[in-house]
Amino acid sequence: MRTKLRTVGISLGLLLLGAIACRQPTVHVNDPNPEEVLTSVVGTWQMEDKHTGELQPFRWTFTENGELIYSNLPTNPSTFVGSYRINSTSDPMHMDLQLPGEDRISLTIFEFTEDGDLKVRLGALRSDYRPDSFTGGDTILRKISDAVEL
Image (cartoon, rainbow, N blue to C red; front, side, top):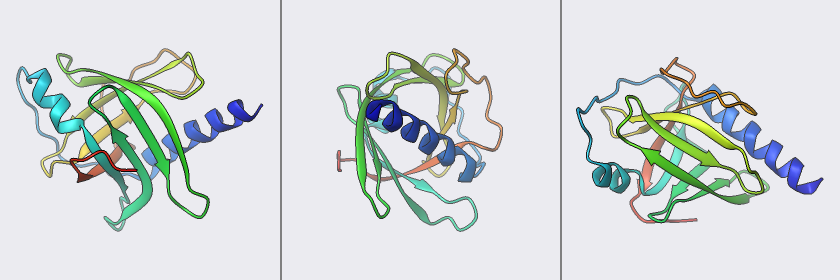
């Protein structure tokens, strides 16, 4: 029961991230180098509020070995470790997220904005749907460190 509640909480947090993020211009790169994309993704990213541009208390940390550390920093800090996998040959690029304690993979798309932010569009929870475009309800993450920080 506790694992299920944690998974639901993470899923709702991921949806919330998309609901309060803003649409930003993106950079399209023909034939991106997978190593360069991975190097660009690895590090600690913090969610940006679409109205104020201020950083919100949600962090995604991507490691070189495929771990995704999702941290919720408000009054009751919590951290969950899952995994991610990138396919940079797709347009838009694909990112598969696996939440802790789940066999299901969340299918997403992502790209980098002109400002170097990471724009992620989450698919529907509990389905095999992967979005094929960005719609404005996308999650925007600003890189706060190239290092893996908790």
